[in-house]
Amino acid sequence: MASFTIGLGKKDQALLELVKSYFGVGVIYDTHSANVSQFRVQLVKDLDVIIKHFEKYPLVSKKREDYILFREVLEIIKSKDHLTSKGFIKLLSLKNSMNLGLSLELKQKFPDLEQIARTEVKGIVVHNPQWVSGFTTGEGCFAVSVESAQTTQQLWSIQPELGLFLPSISVIIFWWKVLRNILNAVVLYCLKMPLLLWLITFQSLIIIF
Image 1: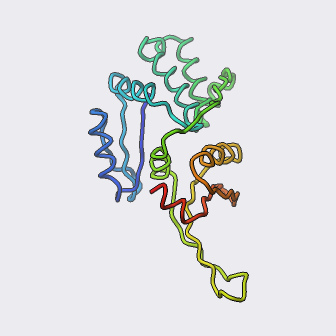
Image 2 (image 1 turned 180 degrees about the vertical axis):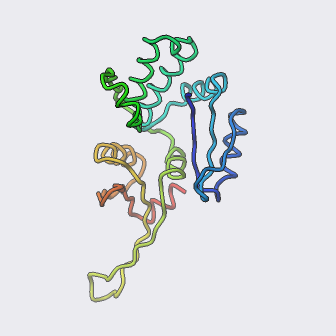
Image 3 (image 1 turned 135 degrees about the vertical axis):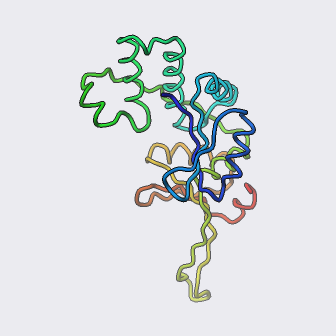
């Protein structure tokens, strides 16, 4: 079953209600986790609404690579090719190349699946600074760093920070280039996994938000 899902902490469930109202499809579920709610779209006709949105407003991240594979899966289901042996194997191959891939059980039952090449996203430019606000809503956190100062004139150094959780070095470098074009000051730090891209100036935080 194909599905589109947005998960947020229950404190932000009102935002999921707005997303559901915007698309006019889908259902909001409480998950097994006590602190997470999900907006989920599963009906094929409803997923068409989601596809139309992201065709008009393309994803500006590595997640677009998963979206392209997902779109192909949906076409297989709509044409009912998944009911044939060939179509079913193609669907499994596409799923195997998406985000979490196949379960261990499916990998053991279908060990010789074709490896579908992911379409690398290139040449993306973010022209609208409001996109940064949307991205931060899902992937960011605000923090204040308080450390011993390196000068004798000040005992403590206080630095407001905005952090974005990102999965790999390549994605971090991608976002550093994108945000550098929007902000005047972007400092890059790679910490322990999950990696973080930190924007370090107080002025930048005011400009964005």
